Amino acid sequence: MFDALTEKLSGVFDRLGGRGVLSEKDVDEALREVRVALLDADVALPVARDFIAKAKERAAGEAVVRSVRPADQVVKIVYDGLIETLGGEEPVPLNLAAAPPAVILMAGLQGSGKTTTAAKLALRISKTERKKVMMASLDTRRPAAMEQLALLGQQAEVDTLPIVAGQSAPDIARRAMSAAKLAGYDVLILDTAGRTTLDEAMMAEAAEIARISQPTETLLVADSLTGQDAVRTAKAFHERLPLTGLILTRADGDGRGGAALSMRAVTGLPIKFLGAGEKIDALDVFDARRVAGRILGQGDIVALVEKASAELDQAKAERMAKKLAKGQFDLDDLSDQLAQMQKMGGMQGLMGLLPGVQKIKKQIAEANIDDKIFRRQQAIISSMTKVERKKPDLLNASRKRRVAAGAGVDVAEINRLLKQHRQMADMFKAMSKGGGKGFARMAQMMGG
Ligand code: GDP
Image 1 (cartoon, rainbow, N blue to C red):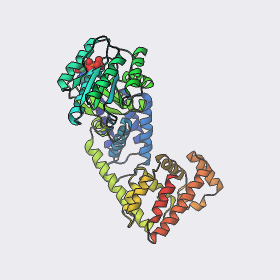
Image 2: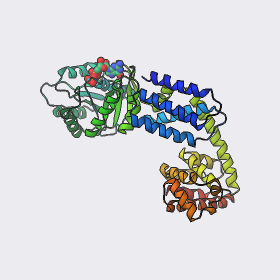
Image 3: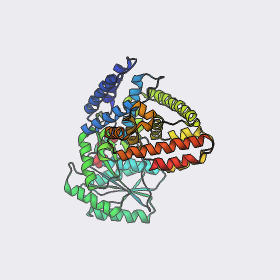
Image 4: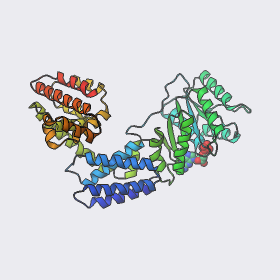
């Protein structure tokens, strides 16, 4: 599904690869080509734009890891961007936590693969999660659809609600729920009627079924081959139905991948599964890391850069620990710390190197440190001159105003940051004389 994109991106990286040192211009040029590749793959324009803006930001903020080639670092930046665009590192599991039966509502256009996917899902849940599953078709307009689901149910060895002619969709939903409850089913999958195009009656019916059945999952099935149309469909459905996730079918086809790459960003909904064939077991859990890896086709390089960055972080943390032990801590150090903390685990990693602070780690983790605050604070520090960062006392009113304007914040925020830095520096000084209490207080301050 991503073949063309993979090929274009590897062309971009190959061209970069020959160069020993990359200038900002090289990186910009490469990212411009990445943008074209994304658009060619039918990724929605705002999504591609956002992707490149963030990649640029990352490239600028990235520490130079000497042990890897600059081009490989660009690969890693694109890889991280892909994972983020695809919805983050961890697959989002199905929520089946409800008094039985937990209801899964399937929605989508006719022909998207909705009915097949309902059966694939039923098979997966009954086999891998060992739950008792029932399916019911609510497609009253197409008796063939009901029979298709019954047939698929037989293949999956999953029960289907007996067909009763003449019932309305809401009535079937009610009957399915009480039948499932009575017979002790854990999960009930409701396959709503699809139409070939978006229309009001279909939406209204699906919304009513959702009200009646109170699903824990309302999944939209969309055909990835339809690219941007799939994205538009998802958006339209999401406006009417409280969708909880997406399933993209025909990931085995030669679509350009744009749907997968745009869906999450445009709808805010996680992609939960990929349909990868006509067979009833052809359903893959959607794993952003794996998909990003597949798109790039540069797994070795990514692993290499990750390892080298981890080593660099470790070395930095050790250096920092040494400085702190001497009671030295300037604004550059604070900025470094903020960057590390953004990667999370950075602060904890650092503390791991200091004696006697084990139990405080948990408090830091619980302090719920906000990423945005970090980024803003880093922006403030990077708006200062080198000398100001070393000697914060130089920051008089007019310098503060300049920094505030540069970082797009008001002066009060600069003052807060400076105060925080002062307190931290004092604390480190005190800590270097022993004891670990200061870290807990610092965690509290960072949270606010
Ligand atoms: P519905 O109208 O949305 O319920 O669509 P169906 O479930 O009837 O599927 C329409 C056709 O798409 C069937 O021939 C399915 O076998 C096929 N199909 C569904 N999902 C996939 C998929 O992930 N890959 C491929 N290649 N075909 C699929």
